[in-house]
Image: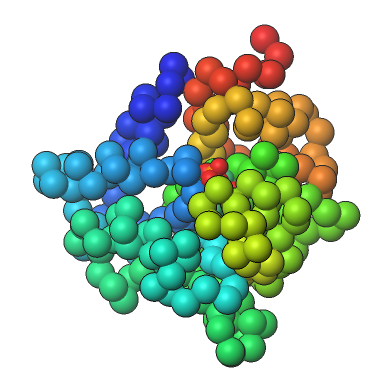
Length: 238
Ligand code: F6R
């Protein structure tokens, strides 16, 4: 794809197509800078009556631990300000993992069960970290299959500090869907924009699968589409 706008439009179009085909689609959704353009396109499509969210069910990939839902940097806040406040998705159909005082293991188990009860994810949209993470599944010796509590890596804390007043404010932990929860989706679309993602995209598509590049596992999924702009694709071999 030529540029970020094109990528955002195409991703929104695929998501809208999914919802037109199945109005009660279960969507897995990411946050971060990359999908902002896609959400903006979806909001304008909704305003033009090109998409109806009334029966759509959503599950967000992840959420920081320790931020209240109304904190401007929480993913709950992000999803409402970028999408949910502007479309007709039902509150009861929106799922964003949130753990506070409660037992994180219980929250994670319940989240998995809720995805199961909804019939599984039809379309999962993903971004990718500069270190190759998907959701907050960070590069490691091993990865977790299910929704779990995770300690963020230095690289992710550094990358995400741009959203906070200072690096010290970035939460150190998050809850994330596991690689198994992601891989169980019927279809997956991964979005990447900009030069900072070029290395991760190249490693992800290298033909090798390693837990050191969690996105590389997607090579084992039967229906993944990767949307990249020129910069993010710049290290892919021709
Ligand atoms: C966010 C998420 C992360 C981001 C990734 C890229 O819900 O799951 O994996 O997709 O960190 O973030 P941006 O798009 O901000 O570069």
